[in-house]
Amino acid sequence: MDAIEILNTIRDNASQQYQDRVPEATRNNIEEVGEAITDLNNAVVYNEFINTLANMIYAPMLVKKSWQNPLGKFKKGKKTFGDTVEEVYNNFIKAQTFDQTGSGLLTRNLPDTKVVFHRMNRQDSYVLTDSPEALAKAFKSYEGVAEYLENLFTTIRNSAELDEYVLMRELFAEAYNNNAMKVVAVADPQASEANAKAFIKAVKTVSGDMTFANSNNNAYLTAQSTDNKPIITFSRKDEQVLIVDNPTDVTCNIDVLASAFNKSVVEFNDTQKEVIDAFPVDGMIAVLCDRNFFQVYDDLFTFREFENGLGLYRNHILHIWQTLGYSILTNCVCFIVASDQNSDGDIADEYTVSYTLKTGVTSTNKRTAVNEGMSYKTTLKGVKGTDTVTVTMGGSNITATAYTAETGVISIAKVDGNIAITVA
Image (cartoon, rainbow, N blue to C red; front, side, top):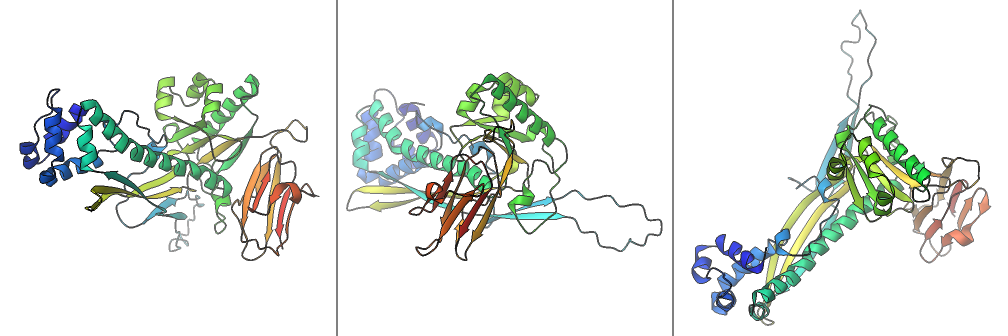
């Protein structure tokens, strides 16, 4: 949509006063339209023009180079009430043996109901400044108007979309670090064709298993410590989504991946797969999950404005409040590149991670197991200068190379033994 179409779209949907004062835009009356909109004696008209534009910033027609959050399609929409979402799942129940005496008739058999709460955790604002004088200068040509509008609104729109994408992408790291994902170790698919085929086979195997009711692909038990009853659940093919990083997507045979979901390549790309630039976890190349894994809601999307009469400008403030969370009640499996560190021909060897932390010290990564050859990273918070931090792997003290006291970060490139972290 060019500048003339934008101006006339605003006029067509504007008040009668606006339509009476601002003529329909044509190729020959740019200055006349500009004078009517930016005339300081027509403040109501100018306000209506700017406010309409501000509320159009999420319309791709307004900017030529708009960027959209590729994970935005998995959002749940606007939250209706309050700042908390209650996610509920009623687990499968076990059959009872027939009792001809009926002695258990009055026994209470409560359902195994799992409940998780998601609270609003994002409150950001974006400030957009405009002035009648700057807009008036732009109305020397329609090209000038188009450039002004694009420069004015592209930045705020794309910035908000990018921030939302980064925050949603970070959910993968939070879920992984909190043991809320099942992990499948794979050889690097970019290293060889055989590895790429093995990765596709692994995805296809997990996808097929997700269609059956079981607890194989859900990390509910390790994601929390108060309930020891596993979740029995399933995800139909059309409920599954494969999120893959760009290098892996380029390497793997898209036809084979599409067939794993019983889809044509076009259908698979449109409904079952999303490509992102990278995962925030070292070695993670793909996530296969139920669409309900993402618990992302819009709490508030609104504009407010403040006019500075002394400076002759106006600030438009876009407020975005959101609830960004992930579900531990659904299927979610991540695929992480591992390697055979001990040369036994198996990359699935698993090593434990144990934490012995003094009161007041916490670890951002709560994983209790890591596959051989994978990386491990965490940040210790609350460590004081008098505390002693010790990191061992396979019984050997690796504190000097793994721990950075200034940042509290523990980083191990390739795990080849049980890890023990102690703060005393």
